[in-house]
Image 1 (cartoon, rainbow, N blue to C red):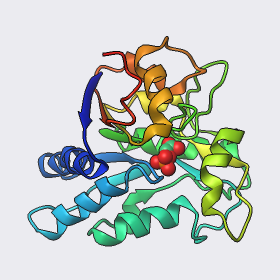
Image 2 (image 1 turned 180 degrees about the horizontal axis):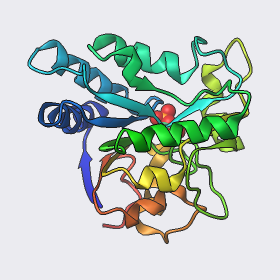
Image 3 (image 1 turned 180 degrees about the vertical axis):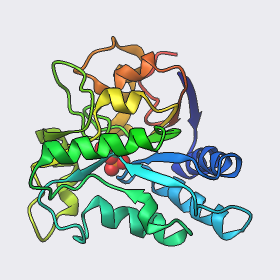
Image 4 (image 1 turned 90 degrees about the vertical axis):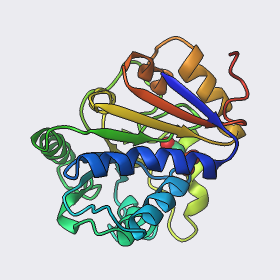
Length: 242
Ligand code: PGA
């Protein structure tokens, strides 16, 4: 694991965005795995800024998002579909047919998960996967569990995740279920970039980096990946021994 500690979320956004925009410049038809939440917003802002300066196109880039809520209309303000368009896609020249999501409203979730996994495989797999981390060390919506998951699946969200995300749900109650990529699938990305900022993430970060590899700390599995870059601000890094 390559661990980079920077002072602010904005500085992290600049460095993380550069990894993605360099990939798009070098490999214009790359496949990107994307994340939602507050953490990636500075990175997405910087990617949009770099795009607006010219010399880079996302027309041949494909994206696959990590997860989506169940039983939330696609165009709800809190769907991850809406989030990604507002925070990133609307500011790029990416094609709508190249952005991909799990359909949290599918009637047959197993079939939907299989469709998504097959699509990612048929696209050649993910070149770079962006991740945040939950207060409980989840990645995607892989909550602490008895064993590491493999492909996409339907998950019941834990109280920790519901408490962290329900602040965004002022009209409708927050969904209790979501579809998410599985751990082994995330691990099959060629490169992984994880960002954690703020003091609430410090314990999860310590357990991810310095604790044992266990499905009770889903992000700890990243210790087994050979190309992971972890960006931390000083608060998120504050409990690390080294
Ligand atoms: P956050 O979510 O960026 O909103 O803290 C991260 C996550 O739950 O993975």
